[in-house]
Image: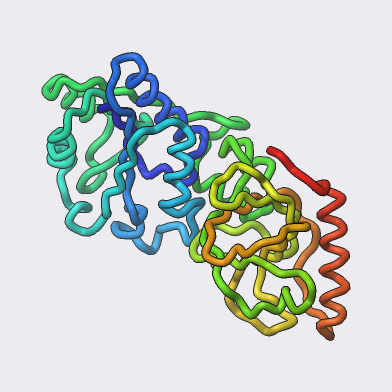
Length: 296
């Protein structure tokens, strides 16, 4: 087995460089290419006050990214207080109960109690346990190390072009469609609703988007509202997506929503008729931007 180790929030191009080491080793030597990650994010357990308030992807979304890269196996370890106080040497000893032949990490990765585990320790242990260590240097963009926190900030600021460069793909959210108040249907613009949860959000407002349904790879153009719907005095942040010219029932299906372009900010209307007119304008603008059909 050839393992990439880390949190991998967002599976950005720096993470992909680590994962590629495990893939290359499996191709070269045979065996399984795997990824070991942790859920929740370790900092949420060790230092909750310093933990990011939002993440780039759920565990399920992370798994889909990893699978698309060609990884054969994803292992998610529940990170709790017991694991937080485990010595780094003991963690590696537990890991090596499996036949691990390659361990790939970022060269600045730290692990174990008090974060005492590092590449130097992994190198020493590799001689004892006969695995090969691949320590990957950070990937640099515009003179700075690419990191999940840097990407979160770019998305928060609405700089999705920079986020796309660092992620290696456009930023998206994935989840199961839930039933809402069905106001969109009453207005003539039915929507698929996604709960945002703790995912990192771009600026609120109306977006031109493309949507993949159940991972079929067929991207549909759409228009989405990310916000609290002030006209209806709603408080919960929600993503509502209207697919252009789509016919079918999306309730309960998994969809992935990719943000293409911010069309306008969210604001309140005096009446539902005014809201309906504005949604019509939003749809027209998204249609012009995305086209009637899309294959990406």
